[in-house]
Length: 252
Image 1 (cartoon, rainbow, N blue to C red):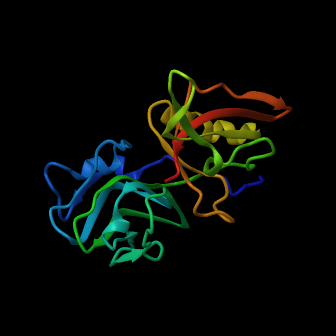
Image 2: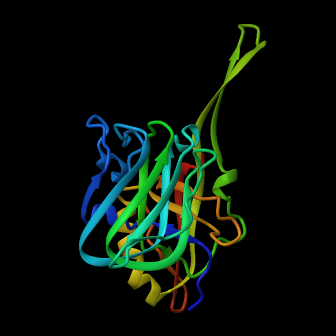
């Protein structure tokens, strides 16, 4: 089976177990960090190092970590994921120091555990809206020609102001994020039956992370959600299926 560098992150182990935070502002509880909403946030009650601990009833694996909707860059913040190896917590990857609020998708060697920990260290109180980690979904093929990378799909509304005589009086620029598409091409019937329905069930209700090329362009993730009803895939070649899903999202 061919596997591309296009990845989707939608499974979130935080939704499957018991989550506690070492510091928590009761007005901004830790559950806000994994409800997939960017309209609410998790905030600790104090600065310093804050641990978000997850305990699962059965071991489960993860090979991606993603986050969005935060102000860590304004508070000298770092963030990382750890797993319990039976005797100690071990880093899944080196701590990240964000320089902006763009969505981040981190690909790492798969680990399996019943205990996981997100570690965030800041010099002052931070906020974060979305944290997700679990098993990533790798597409068999990447994006092809006639496709707009989310980074370039600016979904901007321009409103001109004019006088009665038609003179230009200025312009309002309203950013609506980005518009792009997730293109599924030449997906084998086996891959579709193993992966597609589970992803679509999630995408019908919640956002997800999408990164078109995690290898060459690891900083170009998008926090995405479907724009319209999700079209059903079609058999485009014998034994293979395809679909194009219009998405909206945020890249910063």
